[in-house]
Length: 302
Picture 1 (spheres, rainbow, N blue to C red):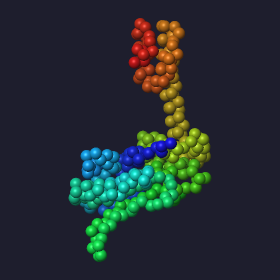
Picture 2 (picture 1 turned 120 degrees about the horizontal axis):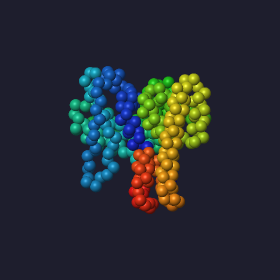
Picture 3 (picture 1 turned 135 degrees about the horizontal axis):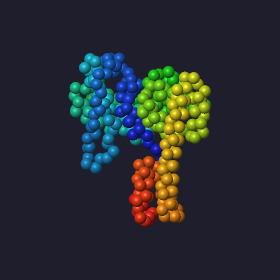
Picture 4 (picture 1 turned 90 degrees about the vertical axis):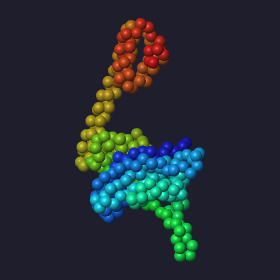
């Protein structure tokens, strides 16, 4: 089975929380240059060396402006498969950015997100020298999530940290607690829209099973500090249940109108109606069922 890549989701995380990601991966920036005053997303793809080159797009770099007027151009590569990482490609991309933004300090960073112990490390730096003369030195900020103990980050108030907790290192019997900390911390630190977006992401990349979901909910309702989260989950479940109920009722209404007008319905028409979960589409079909003079499976659904 091919392992699903979540690199594009980590890129979205970077775009939704740029300052928080900077605080986690490169805290020296604000320590040296003060608070971030402006954030600009730079849309630039690496230059092709040959016309048939493909898959050259790295993650979108961000241009930070600080209190002391320092400009930091920060390309971050989120890499779930270390075999796909190339320091040579990163070097070419970095020099392209340096050429395009000569006034900015370019600091390449690579975040490895796979939860495995490596037998062989990636190349961390490139160097060319002769005797005492250095011709080239290149390195990047290296960050491997699995090298960090999740428990040490439970009290860090950063939504990016909370989202990434299940990608850090922890014992097998700590898994539910780690995910609970990720849920509760994200709920406290992010808007409801971003909570819904990234709690789903956590569920997918952490491969949380249905039984673990039940255990997790039990853990959440047992702790006072997660009482608000428990209520939010209950309310969300009720809203989803009501929405599903409305959709089911809409399907039944369409089928009922067809039965009243045309008698027995072909099973294939019922199957096609039951596959539709868009309320607007079901409303349109209800009107159509009232108005049409004859029915066939293709013409009615299309």
